[in-house]
Image (cartoon, rainbow, N blue to C red; front, side, top):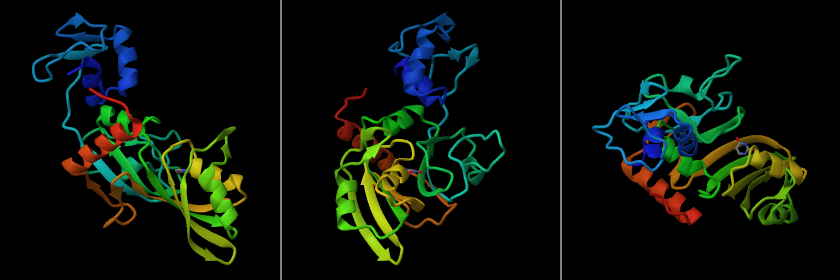
Length: 244
Ligand code: URA
């Protein structure tokens, strides 16, 4: 396998960062300095060191968590607030969130120790569909739904076409389902705010082939092999990009 992939799978860095780390001369294979990210390593035999520390290939884990609101999608927090890792005490491997949900957003969050997978799933080119349910303030008209579908300005750039439908209209609020392929920071909240309907609560209900079916807030499960493969192939197809 490529040296850069080895670093990513070992959880040392994302694949892109791994290439920089290798070029910077921080990696040795069987004690020899290697600066070529494409250098071929035999995972079972070769000894790969980063800054003098031997890297082990952990068994890759892929977890689907139903994140409750009130947990950060980060590994640590300087203010000591609860993070999603607090919900997974039984998992031994070092896990990283695959993408993010805001502190007050609930729903489907993936975690993994496979940096290569994380790169593939979160890279903007790969555009895996994400489905959100947003409870917004006000009664959303058909015209506003069309605006959200066609694209609205977020941080000075129009959003790509989205699939939007009204799930429920009640007095003073509307529940929308919003399907997007982009993953800009706080995108759904900014989209809704830009058409005058601030988000009251937000939940991610699906990512590609995955849903929250059978889980309650705080529950998690391991993905099965087939789901990991499906996500990988979705990422490659959607982005039209070939990966080794
Ligand atoms: N969009 C948001 O605004 N927040 C999230 O947590 C996810 C998508």
